[in-house]
Every structure is written in C-alpha cells, then in structure tokens.
Image 1: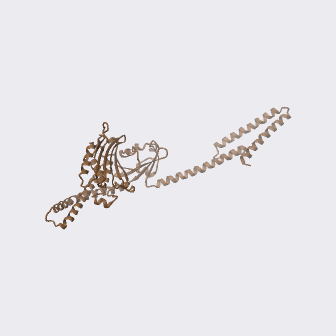
Image 2: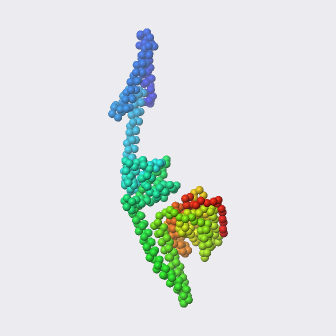
Image 3: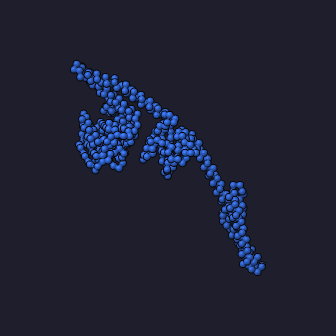
Length: 441
C-alpha cells in the first residue's frame, strides 16, 4: 500500500473513531447528537491547531523542526520537506553554474555585454568593463547608445544585417580600436561582443603606408621604362627578332602601371572615411559612356545592353562611382566570350537604388564568391594574367560602396554567367519622376 493511501486511511479511521466516541459519550448522557457535535468540535480544534503549527513551521523551517502529527498531515510535511530539499539542491547547482559562467567569461579575452530588447545593459564581464569603461553600479540598465556615442556604432545598430562587425576608434586610451559585433538571441535580446583590434589596425596602417609609398616610388621608373619601350617598338631599325619581346615587355609594363594605379587608388580609398556628401550623378549618361567604352574594346561581347528603368539620380562622388561601375563592367567584358551578352541595369525601389551588371560568361564557383573582393584574389590566376587583370578591381568596388553606405551582392551560376549588383540606400537617391524604360543594344 502506498504511503499516501495509508495516510488517508489513517485519517478516515481517526475521524470514524471520533464519531463513534462522540456518539457513545452522548448516548451515555442521553443525547447522542450533542456528544457527536462536541466530538467533532474537538476534532476541528485539533485540526486548526495543527494548521497553525504547520504555518508557523513553514515560515521558520530554516531552523525549526517540523511537527509530526502523522496521517495526511505527516505526508504533507514530508512532501514539503522533499520539495524544499530539491529546491535547495537546484539553487546550489544554479549558483555553481553561475559562478562557473562568471569565471569563464572573466577569463575570455573578449568583452561580453548582454542587452535586453530595449538595448539596455543587463550584464557585462570584466573585459567589457575595461574596454568600454563600464561601471557595474552606474551603467547597468543604461542604453548602450548612451554610453558608446560613436556615429559608426549608431549606424551599425540601424542595419538589418548585423553579421559584419564594426570597428570604432577610442580616444582613451589614445589610438585604441575596438571591434563590436551584435548577435541577436532569445526573445529580442542581444549579445554584444567586444574585442581589442588596436594591434591589427596598426599593422594594417603600416601595410597601407608601405604599399602606397612603394607604389608611388615605382610609378616614375615604370613611366620611364614604358616610354623607352614605346620609342623602341616604333624604331624601324629594330631587329624583327626583338619586336616580339619588346611588345611583350610593353604589355607587362602597362600591366604593372595599371596595378600601381589601382594600388594608389585603393590606398586613397582606405585612408579616407565614408563619403558623406556628393553631387547628383546622371546614371543614364554614365551607363551610356560605359557602354561606349566597352564597345571600343578590341574584344567585347556581341550583345551589350543598357536598361535604365528610372530617371532617379545617385548622390555620390562621381569619379569614385565611375571607377566602381567601370570595374564591374570591365570584369564582365573580360570574362564574357565574344558571342555572349552583357547587360547594365539601373532601377529604384523602396529599398533604394540598384545598379546591376549581368553577363553570360563562365561563372564563378560558389566557394570563391565570399573572397572576390579581397585584394589580389583571383578565381583563375592564369586567365586573369592573360586578360590583364590586377586582382584589385573588386576591392576598389567594395571600398567605394562602403564609402557610400552601399553593399555588393554577387550571384553566379557556373557555366551560365554572373550578376554583380550594387545596392544604394534611399538617402543616396534623388527624388525622381515617373519611371521610364530605355533599352539600347
């Protein structure tokens, strides 16, 4: 028999005994009902006294011994004691887990800040307090934007895609750089990861200075070499056996000049910040000029189309936008066969302005797409050299778009061609009238 069943059986026997005794005593005095009422009243008083003792023990159970009335009351007390022990065990385990979590997060080389749905600080570890100058007493409950008053960080929080971290520069200590990344989790909560990237940024600055200085110093000697090679190639007295090597040297000198030109342009873009201003750019005229330049190439796709679906103008730095669009069109023309097609498209919607370059070339394997905008990265190094590619064009495109708050999207199917799309925010689009469609072939 189960303990609970035994307890309820004991309680029933006790109540029945009370009834029998009360009736018996009342019968002896000539009134059984009065005896029964008196016995039940005494039983009720006993129950109330037990409930009072039980309530007192529940409030002082940390140091008082539980009452032991037996029966159902004893079973209730046993259940309460078991629940209390279980609760104390889980509480101790939870405290141990929290201490282990605090020790592990304190040992992390990166800062960790937990934010609620309102971006208020809920908790942070020791490294985050050191990197962000947070105080455990005064900064808990504060909005993170009120403590990190950096425009770059504010623009980062306003993005829809938070996967790419943002780097901010702090004045205290001097020349310190922090990488900040927000990771959503739970019900609207956010995890802010903070890391010190000062050393990497200094090494990057040294590398940029070296590349810029080396490129600048090499430009003058290459110009002299290219001039002499051009003069030599036009010399009628040049031996016919040397005409081929001289032409190849001219081609390689021009290629090196192009690489140095792209390196200097890339260094300039990396040194400057985001282009906040700009002038309205007539995108339709720019695309017409790019088509004209593509047609003038010695080898170009047979079908070159321009689709302008909006007369909206793009606000930005025209030489930089021209450079970015030209690099995309140039790449598409290089890797599209002569019997293929190339299309330039400009359109505007609620998300902003969009410029796309589509080709019917050989396509790009999916594993190469994430690294396309790295400097000197080539999918096919041999073909890039044969077509004169420097591996810097898409890196320049990426930096130009970043300076204009835009992004680059790449879609490609191996063997069917690729589409490179530049997405500009609505703030970069000038008000336009009713969209029109212009197609030229």
